[in-house]
Structure formats: structure tokens, C-alpha cells
Image 1 (cartoon, rainbow, N blue to C red):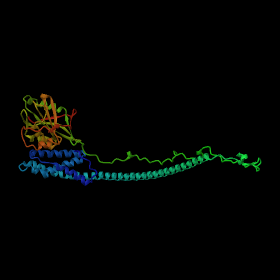
Image 2: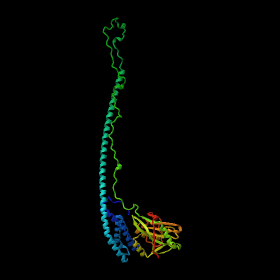
Image 3: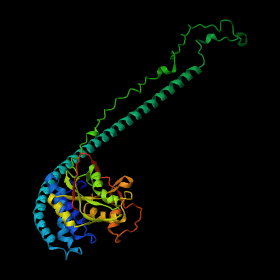
Image 4: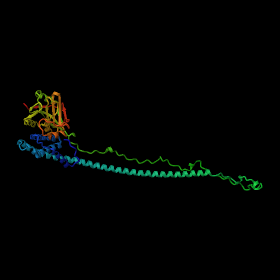
Amino acid sequence: MSRTDFSHLEPAARIKQLCSQSESVIVDAKIPLRRYFRSGLEMVRMASVYAEEGSLENAFILYMKFMTLFLEKIRSHPEFATHTSLDKTNNTKKLKEILPKAEKLKHQLLEKYQKEYAVVVAEQKRMEEELRREQLEAEKEEERRRRQNEEEERRRREEEEEERRIKEIGGLNLQRKRELNDTPPEYNCLSSLIYPTSVLGLDDDFGRDTHPSAPPCISPPLPSSPTALVPSVPNRDLKPAPHSVPQVDRSSKPVSLLSAGVGKSSGLREVKVPTELMGKFMTLAQPNTLRNIETCGVLAGKLTQHRLVVTHLLIPKQCGTSDSCTTQQEEELFDYQDKLDLITLGWIHTHPSQTAFLSSVDLHTHCSYQLMMPEAIAIVCAPKYNETGFFTLSQHHGLSYIANCHQTGFHPHPKEPPLFQTAEHVTLEDSLSIRVIDLRT
């Protein structure tokens, strides 16, 4: 019984969820009432096995289904009013035995769930605290980056301002050099000029310089290049190293501690079938096969470690034809199962002259098995074609379709979607042995 994990729920809510699964029990008027009483006994057997193996949830669900079936719903069956009082009396005794067991399991589950819930709450609190720490670190990192960006922006503006000033100074120096280059040459004294004295009417001594020579004019030395006046600019590549960013290892985040689910995720329990079963059954059915008559048998076994194991092949008294087989005196079969605490796991029959498939009659026969036990299988042996098929009604279509089909005998059914399929949950085991019980003799 696979279920989603509910350890995040409060203990009382989890118990309620388990109880809700018992509400899925449905009473089908087409299934004989005695089948329900048989199914009830097998529920109790499986619940006892689950309880012994420590699978408390599975045991509790089966007990709750038993009580729901026989305290609430069984009275709606049309055969209930006229059914034998022996089954009713035995069923009442079984209910009195189960009630205290179910109550004890409920208290055990509540205690277990309270412990699991405390672990989940503590883990959630720890994860919330870690999330808050991570958020705080992220906020601090964001603030550090904001300040770093502001600092970088400030330095960028300063550098741009420095570049602007440098360009201004360079421009002034260049202009100064141009002005110096455009200045006309200076002369040291006026005596360097020659005037025509004959024209001026001056004698020879008039133009002589009677004063001492003026000192020569000395121009200030010019810089060798325009860039000599430009101040040195620091290397812009030499920027302060940014502060190192702390690295957070996200892979170290703890994993939630959640309780494991019960059973397999596929929903159906595995059914183990001894490989020798089919050979022994075919040998036993050989006389009927030679006469083109079908033979059928019931597969019974045990529940162990959440697996269903076929241990017995029961051949009840029966009446067969070339395309059908009907069991008789089923009470004898039930009594034998009760003595050995066996669970019905399906059935097996031959198709002496046809291939391995489920006919319309086979579909209705198997429907009653699968409604009682979801894992119930139908094995069909077709010796003429050397075929063996392991079948089950398709869970999402075939089972509900056949359960709601009210026709009897051989009649057509739609082929699409398929009504039956290969039983994928079946495993053949060479190491297992089968015990054959022929009740016909």
C-alpha cells in the first residue's frame, strides 16, 4: 500500500488521512455475499502479518476497511437479509476482536507520528533560520557592492576631472609656444640701423653713438617641448584592489529529514509465482485438455515483507466445457484455506484449443477477484499454441468497465482502450515450490 509521505501533517491529521482510505470500500451486488465474508477474513490475515512485520499503517488501514465494510456497507447487499446466520455470527465475533487491535494501533501510530512531526518541525525551524542567515548575508553583500560602486563612481569622476585639467594646461602651454614662435626678432641697439646721411643732411659725426652700448637683450629660454610643462599623470591602471567577496557554499544546505513512505511507489505489491506452477497444472489438466475441456484452479498463498507469494494451487470441484469452467462446492475450498490461513491471489485456467487471452466470461470472472484483491492475477495456459499469459484488468479502465457491465455469458466488449493487460507486478521464481491440492477426488 503505497502512500505519499504525510509526516509534515499533524499526528491527528495523519490518522484521519489513514481512516479516509477505508471509505473506498464498495459493495457490488453482482458479487456473491459469501465472497465479501471471505475477503473480510483475508483482510484480517493480512493485517495480522503487517502488524507482526511492523507495518502499522497497512495493518491499521486493513482493520479500518474491515470495520467499514461490515459495520456500515455490507447491509446494502441484496443477499444480506437471507444469508446464513453462521457467517454473520462469525463476522460479529471477528469485529469484537478487531476493535481493540485497531485502537491499540491507533495509539501506537499517534506516538510514532508525534515523534516524526517533532523532527520535521525542528528541521523546518533550522531551515528557516538558515534562510534568514542567507538573506542577511545577501543584504550585506548587496550593501558592500553598493558602496563599492559608489567608490568606483567617485574615482571615475575624479579621474575625469584630472584629465580635464591636464587637457586645459596642455592647451595653455601649446598656445604659449605658438605666441613665442610668432614674436618678431629683437635688435640689440639702434646703431644696427643704417640711415642715409646724405639725404638727412647730417655730417659724419652726427650719427655716431656717443653713449655706451646698451646691454644685449636676452630672451628667456624656451622649453624644449610643449609637454615639458605638463604635470605627470598617475597610471590609471593602478587601482585599489576591491575587497574580496565571501563565497557561500550552497551545496552544504541540509536536506530535510522526512520519514520514509510505506510500501512500493508502484501501488501494487509484487506477486511471486513458482516457475514450476504452470508445468504441474498442465500435467494435472492433461486429461481434460485432450478432451478439449477447460480446467481451472485457485492460486493461494501468503503475505510476507509486503510481497504476495503463491504457495498453493487448489483444484476445486468443477464443471468444464471447451470454452468455460465453473467451480462447485466452494465452501470446501474456503475451509481448506482457513485451516492454512491462505490468501486468495488469483486463479489459473486452460484454453485447450485457443490462444492465451481473457474472454468476456473470463473478464467477469476475474473482476470479482480483482475487486477483492487489487493484485489478483489470472494465468491462462494455451498448450496448443505453447502460450502462457499473466493478466490483470487495466486499473484505469478495464476494472470499472467490467464492474459496471451487466451482461452475462459470452458477449462483445470494445477492444479499445484495452480491458486487460499483462500483469507487470508478477515475478517468476525458480527457487519457490508449489503445493498442489486437488479437491476433486
